[in-house]
Structures are given as C-alpha cells and as structure tokens.
Amino acid sequence: MSDNQVLTLYTINMSHYSEKIRWLLDYEQINYVEQALTPAIHTLPMLVKGGRGKSTVPLVEKGSSRVQDSPRIVDWLQREYGPLKSLPQDHLAEILEIQTRFDSIGKAVARYLYSPGFAHKALILDIWTQFAKPWEASLVRGGYPLIKSVFKSKLKINPRDVAIAETKIDAQIKWLESRIKLGFYLVGDSLTVADITAAAMLAPLACPVEHPIYGTHDFRTKMASAAKIWADSPALDWVREVYAKHRGQVWQVMPNAS
Ligand SMILES: N[C@@H](CCC(=O)N[C@@H](CS)C(=O)NCC(=O)O)C(=O)O
Image 1 (cartoon, rainbow, N blue to C red):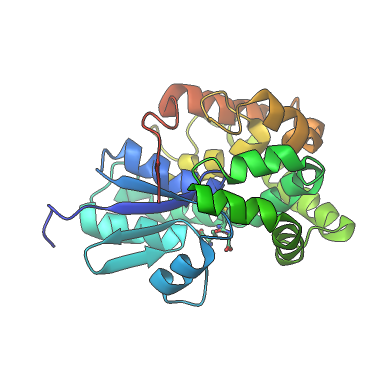
Image 2 (image 1 turned 90 degrees about the vertical axis):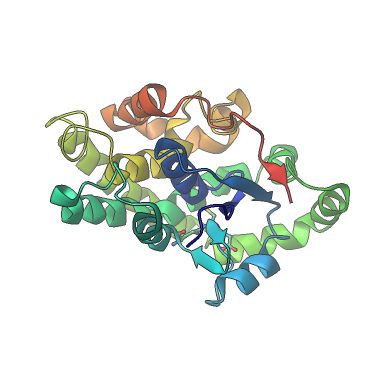
C-alpha cells in the first residue's frame, strides 16, 4: 500500500465511536483528514461506502480500502500502520476484551443521552448542523420532526429501553471503578486501545472539558443531566483524567464539512 494515499476518517461530531478512532489516530500520529458528516445526510454515503448494509460512522478510507465499524478499523490500522503502541502484542487479548466490553455500551450511552436531550431541540439542531453545508442545515432543520422520530425508534428511546441502558452502563461503570483500583491504565502501564475505548465510550457522560461538544455547559446540563447519578463515580473522574493527561483539545483543527 502506497503511503502517500490520504487516510480519510468519516465521523459525526457527537459520535463517541468516531471519537474513539479519532483519538487512536491522533495518539498513533497517523495522518488523516476528517470528514465530519451531518446526521441523517450521512446515511446514504455511509451505506454505500461501508457496503455492509450499515450506515454507521466511523468509517475510514484509504485508496480502495474502506473499513467501517470501530473494532474492525482498529484491526485494520494495526495491519496497515502497526505495530501500534496502543496495541502491545503481549496484552492483546485482554485489550481487545476490554474494547468489546465498552463498545457494547455505546448504544446504551447514546440512548441515555438523547432521551433527555430531545427536550432541547435548539441544542440538538446546533450540534447536528455544526459542520453542515447550508443546504444540509436547511434539510435537517426542516426535516427535524421526521428525523427525530426515526432516530427515536432506531435508538429505542423509550422509558423501558432507557432503564435497561442505565443498568447496562452502570454495570460497566462499576467494573471500571474496581479495575482502576489496580492501576491507572486498564492494561499494562501505558495507554492502550482499552483505555481509549473505555474513555471515549463514557466521555458523553463524563463531559471532559477537552471535548468541544461534551465539555460544554449546555451539553452537560441538558443532555448529560441524567448522568448525575454517577456524579461521584471514580470511573467518570478517571475518564476526565485520561482526557486531561492523554487527549488534550479534541479538535485542534476543525473537521472539514463534507
Ligand atoms: N459498532 C459500530 C457502532 C457505531 C455507531 O453506532 N455509530 C453511530 C454514531 S455514535 C452511528 O453512526 N449512528 C448513525 C447510524 O447508525 O446511521 C462501531 O463500533 O463503529
């Protein structure tokens, strides 16, 4: 594979799975160009590029290679750019197991946030249209009632599923609380994909100041308000600490609107 091909990372600004891969690329100092897509408008291009019947971000593209789904992207980056310092071979199985553990609550976290979040139309629309072209912003603003209702049914935003989400998240927060008693890093003595995944998946609840969306007062008080049940959790303190120590400001350069 020729290395002068540009790696493109397709994201949605609020997506924590996108943040996981963005962080990994930044941490590994792999050059990439970010294409921040507008929710709803992202669907068709991601379906086509992904070729797997899924419309999710993140998705990476380099030459003719297109890889969708964050754990698959991690594997591909290891093959393409490895060995990655965040994936030490001697701890690989354990790192991947923790990645799976935290990937498995990503949807629950989104459900948990959008449930109170949908009461704040102006905030949601501001976030969704942050990188939108004018025509995309008009479409999303005009189509908001429809997009919201598709979103609510796709993400199962209803009281029963939100309660299930809370239980699922709580179990992993408890797991993390006991794990970090053993040491700051989840595996070994340096930052790995395990830490990046756990911190990125919980970041919308922990609201680290380094994140340009999760760190805002509006996000914290309106979308992440329900997370106050974990306000005193050492696990969410740990997320904020990992961000402070290893992440820095998330968008050094603003992503390009596509
Ligand atoms: N298993 C996927 C999940 C990704 C995911 O759920 N992404 C959300 C944003 S956080 C998304 O793209 N939702 C819009 C859609 O499904 O069309 C991964 O690890 O990449």
